[in-house]
Structures are given as C-alpha cells and as structure tokens.
Image (cartoon, rainbow, N blue to C red; front, side, top):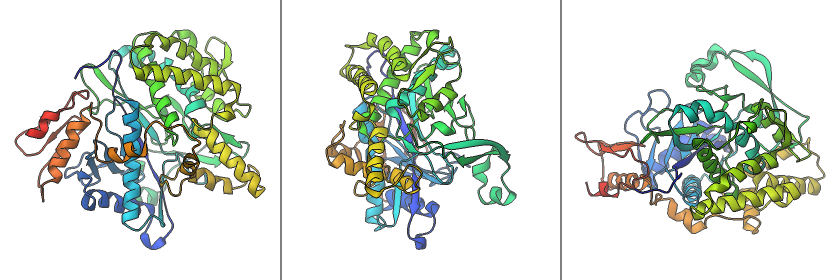
Length: 489
C-alpha cells in the first residue's frame, strides 16, 4: 500500500494494574485470568493462542489476537493483563483502538457481574509497594546503524522533556536505594518467571520530600538503553523481532511513557515522537541539543515544583524544557503541509508549549498531570488535607480506573473539561473493527474467519502472518498492506 513520506506504523502496549475487593474471587492473578478467558471463550472477541508464543513468558492460551487487530494476553512476568493495540498509521485510529481494548475489559467485568468487585487501572506505579509497570510505545524506524547506534542519543532530550505535556502526574516519589537484596529461595520457587535473568533487586522507599511530580515512571528509570529491563528499566529497550520489521525498518520499543487518560495528550505524545524520529532518520537534529545526564535531567524535570523545568545540555547551555521542545518543533516545521495529521501535530505542539510557558495550570483540558493535580487540590481543599496524606494516593489511582462509571478522569471528561480526539461511537466501533489501512485489517478478518468455525483445531496468528491450516502460512510482513484479499482464502 502506498504511503506518504515519513509515514510510519505505531502502536502502544499497556500493562494494567488490578485490585480485587472480594476475597472470594481470589487474588489479582486469578481475576485477570477470568477476564481473559471470558473475552476469548464466551464473548468470542478473539482467537486464543493454541500454541505457545514463548514457553516461559507467553505459553499456550495466555491470550490471543482480537477481531479489532489488537492483542490481549496475560504477561507471565507479574501475571498482569496486557493489551497491545493494532498497528496504526493514524492517531485517531490508535486512540480508538486503545480505548476499545479498555472497554472490552470493562464489558467483561460487567457481564461477569464483577464490576463492583474488580477494578482495572492503566496507572504505572504502585505507591505503597514500590512497583512500576509500563505503557510502552512502538514505532517503525529505519533499521540502520546510524539511528540505532549513532543518533538515538538525540532522542533522549526530547523524551526527557516530553513529559511536560505527556506526563500523567503522581503524588509523591520513590527512591531506589543502593541497598541491594537477593530474592529468597521461596520467592523464586513461587514466582520463577519474575526472576529470570535477575540476580539482585534494588530496594524502593517512599520519598516524602516530593509532593507531586509530572511522571509516574521517572523515579524508576535507570538507564538510557537496556536489553533486559526487569529491575533495570531504561528509556529504550531494543527489539529485533518480526512485530514491525519490514523493508529495512524495525521496531523501536520505548519504555519511558505512561498511559494517558486524556486523548489529546495521548495523540500529541505519539504524534510529536513520530516527527522527531523522522528528524533523526534524516540527520536533522544537531549535537548541540544532546544531554550529558538524560536520566538525571528526566527526574529533575519531573520533580520541579516551580514548573519552570530548567535543564542543562552537554555543552553547558541552560534552558527550559519548553524551550528545548521548541527547538525540536522548529526543526519539524520542515514537514508542514505534507498531511493534515502533521499540521495538527505541529499546530498543537506549539499551542501546548505556549500554554505551558504562560500558565501550566490552565492546560487541564489537554494534559493529564494538570487535570490530576486540579482534582487532587480540589479534594484537599474540601477534606482539609495536605500533600502528605495517604488518601491522595487513592485519588491518584482512581484517576486511572478504566471503567468510565468509576474513573475520576471520566467524571472530569463527562463535565466537558477535556479536548477529545475520538467519539464514544468511534471507540465502540473499534471494539470489533480494526484500523482500515494497515495489516491489522486483514488479520482481523482472518480472526473472524476462525471464530466462525464451531471448533477450530488448528490456527496460528502472529504479527507478521497467520496459518489457518497445516499446509500454508499467510505472509503479512508488510504492516502498511491491508491484506484484505486473504479473507477470500
């Protein structure tokens, strides 16, 4: 399928948190298993894997591909529910497909009559346990040494400062201490998958000096790049696989991100990142924007109470995070006029930076951390609390409840206080309809074909292809192709 210059495939994976109020339903690991089984075997929204995609991390029946082109599964590391969107080319498709996955989970809870007993969250931190879990972005990028080895460090300054509009906000902070401890023998025997490749674990303690910060993940990122990220989290986790790899391009797997409730922030986060990746591919970002200490700067920006967000570049130049973002925006203006999507990104990137500079707290209709802080401060005023009260952690968490009837964010949105990218009808349609301009369309049609059979005994679905019998494999290696003709096979 034809594509515009610089156009790329993107998608997002979200790891969900789970709370179970009714002890008779078991623990969270039991609850997410029930949700997964319902969606595949009763609601029949997807084809559950008959084969093991990975003997350790994704054994048979741990999940599968859905009719909407996305993938829902239980990640064996942590036994949490995870949803990977279909491959997308348009920001609106990404938002709709992502929210559709959440609505499928909410539907399962409601139809199982567990919606009052089980809550699912798209937050990224456990305030009291010290754990963090991710919302990972995937982008198709040129698979050459220049960007993956020589230019990727020029992405770090953008990611470090992107949180001023992409951060979801959090109460308090965590300190990763130098006190290293080894998991006990009993821990490893009870949860062996959690400790594969892990010989030691850092300790995490609350940081009472922090009232509120921009990012839920910033305190837990240790390196710019790492291949094994369990207790070794990085900004970027290199992935050499077939998920997106095609025609000299491969998947860039980004770990430093969070699950935005606000659709506008979500779209701007992914859209600006797409343009910056193109700048890197075309060698347009000057070395003068490099950072000497991106991890330190990331944490300082997240925690800056002044909301001025000063940063330092490798050459000793000091500027604000807003001004650094403006440097990337200025470079990206070269893409203006190529598409409506590019122009939307450029226009709103500039508008948001201007708003953040003049009055950050006026941006609650489009930025999550601002909306969350507003809700928290209102609650504190009503209840007579201060930032040190543990009740604020519950308010923080409920902002991320994916159930619209319970979520503080959705209550905020229901009052007309947010800018939207898609409609509720778009989300409902995306629960079963995949994006119409990527291979997700063909995969969704093939999943429907399998579901039409009463008792299919053999099929295999992968990101890059499928097999509906033992005789042939249907190659779907081009993520830009819809493969609509495969439905006739």
